[in-house]
Image (cartoon, rainbow, N blue to C red; front, side):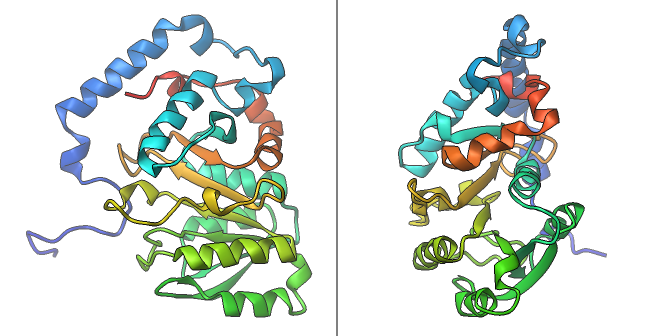
Length: 267
């Protein structure tokens, strides 16, 4: 039996007292009310001219960009954002669209358990490398990249901030090095930044997107509101340069239309 003052850290979620506040309930109700006032947009398939809605409601993406600018203390172009049904959907889309059966996904060992499921759903193999206090062991990673399986490594999946389950955060130096390795060995980085917004300020740790190079983009940074508001709020995003972002909208269920969740403006 747990001690009366014990805190449950098994799952990544806000404290129950924060989820049940009147202010949060009122804010959610008001947001959906505003979304429903745009009935033609929110209850329809959406105007897909130029593919705008395939990446998410433009107003939502613009509001999200403004919100993230305040959190990141850095500029965010709303056109580099795609809305998703939570963070895991962003990771799944990255694997589904940019990978193929037989590819290898490298991850920290241990790592978030559902990363295994999402990779194996696409018939991809997983390869674990050790994690150090400042993030993934890049020396061990490069040994795999230059080894017999190196040509099959398509992704490095990482939880770079408050890593699940170790709690470690990858240093900016390792992030820069990892992007350089990605460019050299032609793999993509899926940065699961579910805990990026939970840093104490100033953290000094940038989102992985800001270490990427628009001329040779390698990073898909995945975010979510589930850790801020509640795990039932499946609203997230992928932050990436255009050549990596736009192909994600080609999946059939994305092409079928937007949803009410993302049409609720940010507070």
